[in-house]
Image (tube, rainbow, N blue to C red; front, side, top):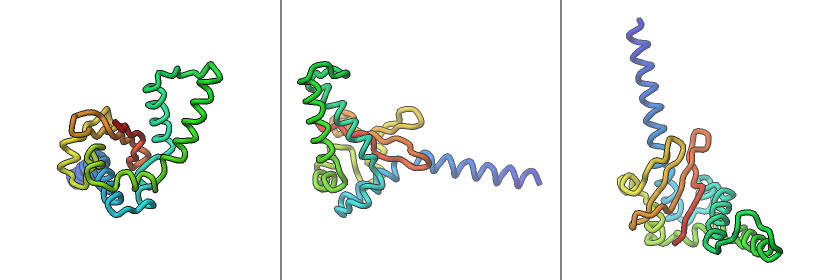
Length: 157
């Protein structure tokens, strides 16, 4: 009796572990297929747009050498302009528009082929997965969200 329960438990743990490991690959391929189909509603399921906006905002501030804490009125104005711009720029529709081209998706490490995702993807701990562009630079960050995975950061070079 214990042998059957032990075997069943082993199978369940193995399946759960497999689903956990396969999660970012499945998300990436599904997101890529949604981009190829130009389906903004489907794209929204795979992207945390608030996190992507924050990622863009932080990246933009670093590129402009702005301090993290805005102190001057000029820095505050630039921060607000940037935030407003990013709110308009980062949306499911704009993401479809920007990434409907296969070359642009490739530069973000996105592919509908699991084997391509395996080649360009790297785990960062157990909760994060990064996709690299063809030059090996980080381009897309996925993070665990509940039982699924979502894109939380994009780096456009």
